[in-house]
Length: 331
Image 1: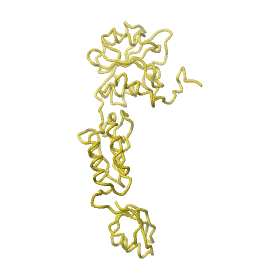
Image 2: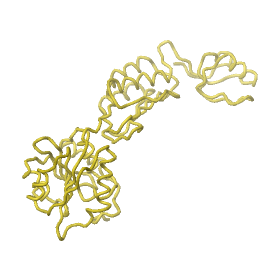
Image 3: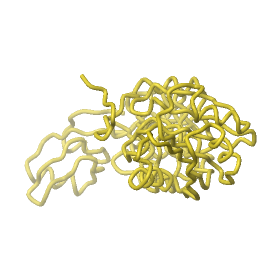
Image 4: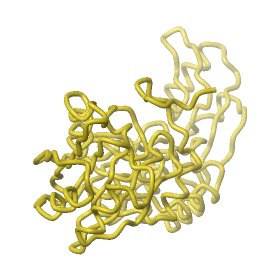
């Protein structure tokens, strides 16, 4: 692509790079100049303008952006493309789900050509209907076709929306005389709100004594697709009431604790039939974002994180403090 200042007489067919004020109104940048534009520029006494002119091997900015955007969502569902405008195409979710991104391939896309760019939300970000998952932007007024084709080949199908496949959950709450009294009211509503935001239903809430056997019996009796456990006393060891109850119910604990704060005291695993079980940290009583949200969302979408993946959440895992937290980080 050629870019630079030319005489007005040479500008027909080129793209105006910088807006020009004319007596009849502003001639906006990005305008493909025709003979009428050239005549208006000349009549205004303007001798030179800065333009971009595509070569035979170039694509215009809108066509280039749409070509790449189409490739990125190729074969996927739950995503739509905006109309191209000034070299930009946005990728939106059409339903609730998680952004499922092949980061290595998308890094490769951005390494092809400085003029062809892609920005996304973080991988596994929960998306609502209409949420923007990614945006493709061609920086200049055009890009080399070879660059666009290479980026499209590298990124084909690398942007996905993982749908929520878990319809409902049961919350098991333990009680004892010295336990927290926050399990009712706002705490329940915060947990239910998390599920609602995923399109899930809190089907039932069960209260049992803070004993491993009682929790295990409750787990065995649950019929929903997911089980949440909120203990009256914080789970502080892999052998504590919550994790031990999951084992006694015939399940396995995948991970105890996570390097995300708030949210450290989470555990999760699954029953023998594959249904996920999450031991919620106390901060789940607040609607504020915490580490449990990241695990809950992955499990709801049928993409359970491995223990190693949870360990990797520590970088970026220092979240905003919850004002109502009983033991804040302090100084």
